[in-house]
Structure formats: C-alpha cells, structure tokens
Amino acid sequence: MRKYIYSVFVFFFIGSITAQEQEKEMSLSMQEAIDYAIKNSYENKVSLNNIEAAKKRKWETTTIGLPQINGKVDYQNWIKQQVSLLPVAAFDNTQSTIDIVEEYFDGAVRNGKEVTTPTGFIPLRFGTKQTMNASVTLTQLLFDGSYLVGLQSAKTYLKISEQAKEKTELATREAVINAYGNVLVTEKSIEILENNKKILEKNLNETQKTYDNGLTELENVEQLQITLGNVESNLRNAERLKEIAYQMLNVSLGNTIKTQLTLTSTLDNLVVDNTDLSLLAAQFNIDNHIDFKIAQNDRESKRLLMKLEQSKALPSLSTFINYGANANSDDFNFLDSNQKWFDYSLFGVSLNVPIFSSLGRSSRTAQAKIALENADIRLEEAKQKLNLQVERAKSEYQLGIENYETAKKNLALAERIEKKQQVKFFEGISSSFDLLQAQNQLYTQQNNYVQSMLNVIAKKAQLENALNIPLK
Image (tube, rainbow, N blue to C red; front, side, top):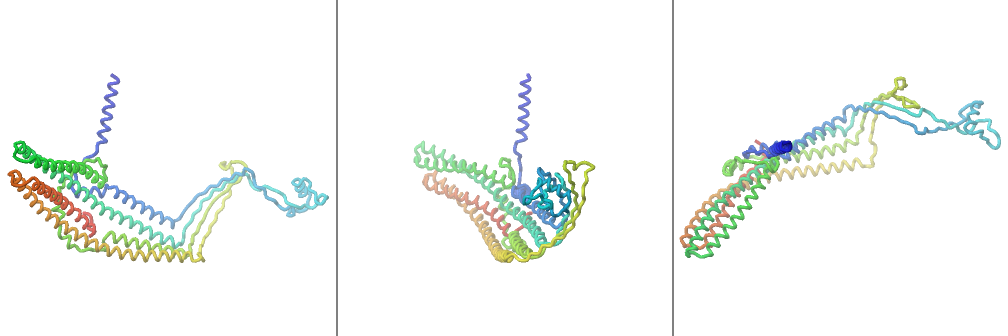
C-alpha cells in the first residue's frame, strides 16, 4: 500500500511538471506579431541592455570629475628590523660613547693601539617592530580637457545605443513580416498541393479504369503516376518546411521554437493591406533616416576623438586633502584603548603641464583629423546610398505589385487550360503529354502566384524601412 501511494504521488508530481513545461500557445495577427517581437525578440532585449550599459557608462565618465574619497589601512611587521649606521664622530668624546663603541666593536684596535677617539659607525635599529597607518583621502579634479571631451563622448555613445535600438526595431519588423509571410505561403502551398493531389488521384483512378477496359494506353496511366509522385514528394517537403517556418517565426518573436502559434492574418488579406501605391509618391526625408543619423553620430565620434587628442596638450589641475593616524608598537596591540595614535593631515594641489612629447601628440591629432575626414566622406556616401536605396525599393515594390497582378491573371488562364486538357484527355482528343504540359504549367503558375503574394508583403516592408517609416 505504501509503495502504491508513493507511485501515485510520483505520477502526479511528474504530471504537474510536464504540464508546467508544456509550451505556451499564442494567437497572433501580423501586427500583433510585430508588436510582440519589438518587446520580446532576442535582438531587442540585447539593444535594451546596451542602452542601460551606455547610461551606466555615461555616469561612470561623469563621476571622474566628482569628488573621490578613498580609505587606506597599512600594517607592517618587521620580521627582522633594518639596521641603520650612525657615524661615531657625530657623538662627543666621552666615556659613555667610548663604551658604546667598544660594545659594538669589541675593543677595536687601530694601528695596534687602543682607540681612544671614537671612529667608525654605530649600527642601530630605529622604530618599533610593528606599525599601523590609517588614512582617508579626498581628491577633486579641477580641470582636465580630456574629462570634458569624455563627457561629450559618453552622451554620443548613449545616443548611438538608442539609435541602434531603433535600427533593431525596424529590422525586427521586416524580419517578422518575412517570417510570418513565409508561414502563410507554406500553408497556402500545402493547400494547393493537397488539392492538386486529390485531382490527380481522381484522374489516375479514372484513367486506370479506362486502361483496364482497354480504352487507353498504359503510358497515360504511368504518366499520371509520375506526376502524382512528384506532387506527393513536394507536399511532404512543404509540410517539413512548414514546421521550420513556424520555428523561424518563433525565433523572430523571441519565443522557444516549440511555442504553438496560430496565425489569424491570411495571405490574401495581407496582400490587400500591403498594396499601397501612395508609398511610391512618398517624400524621403534623409535627415530623419536612422542610418543617416547613425552615420552622423559616427562622424561626431570622430570629431570628439580629434578634440580629445587636442585636449591632451592642455594642463590638468587637481587637488587633494587627507587625514590619517599612525601607531607604533613592538606587539600587536593597536586595537587596545590605551594605544597611542598620532594624527596627521595633508593638503596639496597638482598641476600637470605637457611640455614636449617628441611630436607624439601632434601625430595622434593628425591621425584623428584624417579619421574625421574619412567620416565626412562616409557620411556623404551614406546620403547617396540611402537615396538610391529608396528609389530601388520603390521600383521593386511597384514591380512586386505588377507581378502579383500578372501572376493572378496567369493562374486563372492556366487553370482554364488545364481543365480543358483534362476534358480533351478523357475524351481521347489529346495525349497524356499534352495534359502533363498543362499540369506543369498550372503548377508553375500556382507557385508564381503564391510567391508574388509574399513578394508584395516583403517589398513593402523593405520600402518602409528605406523610407524610415516609424513603427505603428
């Protein structure tokens, strides 16, 4: 009975863990997927962390010019104290001095005679065996050109991080649109292939019966079997791609790849929503484009770098004041209340003036100036490339819409042709080869139609990024 109760407990415990570990389910439209990814995608989370790090770095730079307080405690214990030599001549010629000399030199003799006048050195140990010193120092930077430039650089670094976040959000929008569209395209392809399979199975079944009755050739049956086999193979591949497409969408959203997703937007509705010819006439303001802003910030960082190198030729001024106390003893009794401590305090000002660096500073300044000139060139290049990117994106978007309309018409024509060929084939007017050609043409147009739908959605997202249209 005890084993039974234990087994039941383990069963329910494992069941509860399994239930907790089941992946969550989500139902998302295209816009909901974009909004979700902006908050939860991996890249956006990293961008937010980078902004926080930039804020901390800015404050770190600011604190360099604020008062700094440091405490210090030093403890020293002479295992064997150092000996100092004092010249005997520094003492008067008294009997006590002579006794000290004789004690250390053991009755030293000079030139065979006893020394009556002290000469040589007396080895002595000064101080106590143990010492302790405790101090607090306040330092304040009064002027440093590098510090002022550093403050400006920290602000620029924060702005770069914020702009990188904006850039990441735009890239996330485009990635989610493409991933969402790929899922819908895969599902649409599966739907078309399943329908083609049903039609082929019906045709093959009817052709097989006709052949069994001796009214058609075996080649017609085999031709349909080949076509059906190809469709079945493509269907299995599309089903595998569907699973991968969902996993890719989950990665774009910031989910685990096993998260169950239900997409509420349809491919047909997305094509209608993303067909907006007014975008082709939209004015492009390059000053608001995130890539141009990033290029401007890169140029600003190079300007500050040159300014930093120039500031290194300026003097720096700082001041400090400290307070401390030290104690001396032959034994470790520094924590005793009767231990004698001796206070001290010091105030100072330090002026550091760069005088000559063998032209090292001017060389670094020249390099920074060249880097600034290169940044100006890159800024102009970015301006021209962004204008070209907009024109190309508009052209590709317009082409995408036109290709969609053409694919839609071609699909309708291919469907009618294929149906006519089916009728002719079963009436014995056309061959299986003619039917095969019509079917292959239909399948090609079906694929073109589905891809053109995805292309309209993707090219609009690309144009919105080129125009730097903000997120909704």
